[in-house]
Image (cartoon, rainbow, N blue to C red; front, side):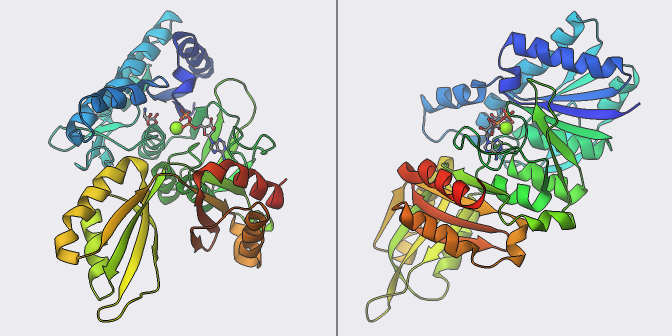
Length: 405
Ligand code: ADP
Ligand code: ASP
Ligand code: MG
């Protein structure tokens, strides 16, 4: 008898027919004698719909209340999934994140899991139930509801698989697995049989939303091997696991495009010690994640001035500009500007460590397509560029063609 954690994303539970389909799949595993913990997301569109409602009231709602609001999406689906299993004669119990013992810190809207005490999960499993857990949510030690960041049901599934020492962790979604690029943008992208944690980390960090970044970090840290596969068919998916020697043979495993970034530029910042520390400390205090940073060569006489640009997630843009405006008196920059029309294009592969000329080939491909590069950042296994959003998808297809197919 195996203990299996299965996670079904928003599209896979997008309507009641799909929820019945999920229940049939779960029932088939259970009939084989497996114990099942099923993590579900909100039905597709529900989380976005709730965010939209709050924005009709204010552009900067309280983050605590946003968590209270958004957690209701997953609560609908756990109950509907349990009801669908009951209709098939399968005993099932739904649990909120808090009831499943998921304890987080108090950083609302992007809380981190601190520990999981899954006593209730064990109890209901031992009584012969399928246990359905609400993805994306937890609670603080004081009992306040939190959420784990967009796409956070992936994290719930992986963290539960680790805490329960599950034999198998399956992430069911609306594509057959992890592809060399988003198949909706690059039609000839190929499904990968396996991906190393580090590659999946970089791909997720670069905008491949097939797996939430933090869920992959967690999987790597606790060695949770997982499979990404389709809830619509029985095709084998993609196994995400520790790197093996043979993976180095491929230079570029995948290409990602992140359309969810925005750029903030501080123009005319005094170029003196402590300024960057002050800016990025203030952003960190606001729990704003900064991705790329570029500082120009300074210009002017007296205290020279420079321009400082950085990127943040689009939903954090308003908060970030507010933080920067709050520093104006203290730092004395000339002006601040924000640009939402950017895309971050990245290529990723562990094989880059042992191959040279990869960046040059990427830049040459972009040049041939007339795409200007605004910012560049690299890691050992990734090269990212910020480009004009309008050219993003075209550039992605060109770079995919140059390196993969
Ligand atoms: P779920 O609701 O199941 O969590 P998501 O919408 O979060 O699903 O993630 C699945 C989507 O991720 C796919 O529909 C696909 O468009 C997108 N995607 C982006 N990059 C990739 C990639 N490299 N491989 C597969 N899917 C990708
Ligand atoms: N419902 C949440 C979201 O849309 C969490 C998830 O789907 O994983 O981000
Ligand atoms: Mg997702």
